[in-house]
Amino acid sequence: MINGSKVLDHPIRWAMVGGGKGSQIGYIHRSAALRDNNFQLVAGAFDINPERGMAFAAELGIDPDRCYPDYKTMFEKEAQREDGIEAVSIATPNSVHYEVCKAALEAGIHVVCEKPLCFSTEEGEELVALAKKKNLVVGVTYGYSGHQMIQQARQMIKNGDLGDIRVINMSFAFGGYNYKIEETNAAAKWRFDPKKAGPSFAMADVGTHCLYIIEAMIPDMKIDKVLCSKDAFVEGRELEDNAFTLMRLNGSEHVQEGAKVYCWSSSINCGARHGHVIRVVGSKASIEWDDERPNQMTYEIEGEPVRRLERGAGYLYEEARVEDRIGGGHAEGLFEAWANLYRRFALAIEGMSKGEEEYGDFWYPDVEAGLAGVKWIEKCVESANNGEVWVKY
Image 1 (cartoon, rainbow, N blue to C red):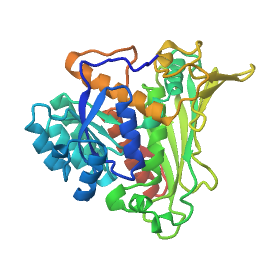
Image 2: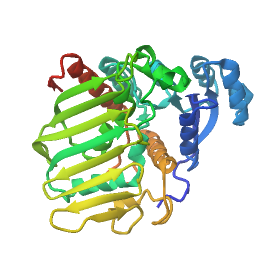
Image 3: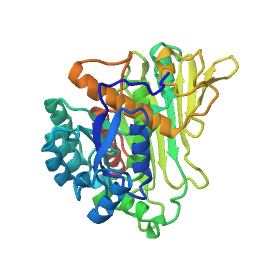
Image 4: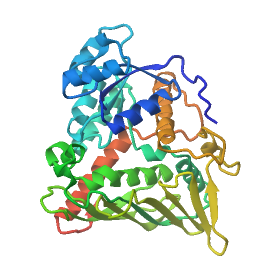
């Protein structure tokens, strides 16, 4: 169980780019990173408006000398300090993720980045190579993967409880964008602008969360082909607000040859708060997880009563129980999931220099996962734009 005890020699000196006042995602980053005293927020360039960003940094109690007008100034000035930053989180609109991440790596700084990591496979491959060359960690905040039941699903699949995986049915289909919300909501407006959001909205914004969760559950999963259909149902949008993706998998130790994955990515599912559900069907049994009920997962064996597995229960695999933050029966939520990921990022940063990991089957959404998400978006867009055809992955 995680109880807040010290796991690092010292808290990692940490900064943020973006995530300023009014940013919901910025608050989640700070709450998660600071929860276990693995990170210490010492600097920041929080806003595209320098005065507003520096004022917000002061509200957070950051030394005024370490409140910066932009990320380039921050990286330059912090490099001149003996106590300069060791890691940075990027919580900006998508269009600058690549340039900030690259600049941080070139400056010798570990990175935690919002997804998508960048806009193209070429950019992603460049970041992968740079991170390896510099011996630096790049974590990507696929925050839902930090829920304890994702780790339980991973262990169940690894240990053969489900048999060979045949079908995966997943969705992240929320409502709320079923009208032109971007006309009155600035936070929504940039998401439909290809220059700022990239080549996709729905698939990049929510579909890649589903993709990474099944990659975490089934680390040896390999996609063979992709077929995608996407639409902008709300008139005037340049990017899709709804997409259906079908994937064919190659066989592996835990996956039957020709297994199929279906993903519904949407922002126009009227009435749905999230609609984020993952169902994995094997030759022996199935599991299903719903992020609106993240502390439970159904486990269904053919011919037997349905089981509901509970977070924190003693019957879970040890690798899942290690991330308990409070006893079973108490509800844990998204902040705890993000904190679990930030704890993994901290351990990865510490382990990068020491060659150590704290517990078995250690993983986190890394730079390779970021690249995988970008490649998936590219292949989906390629399939849809070429008449909804199968595309070799």
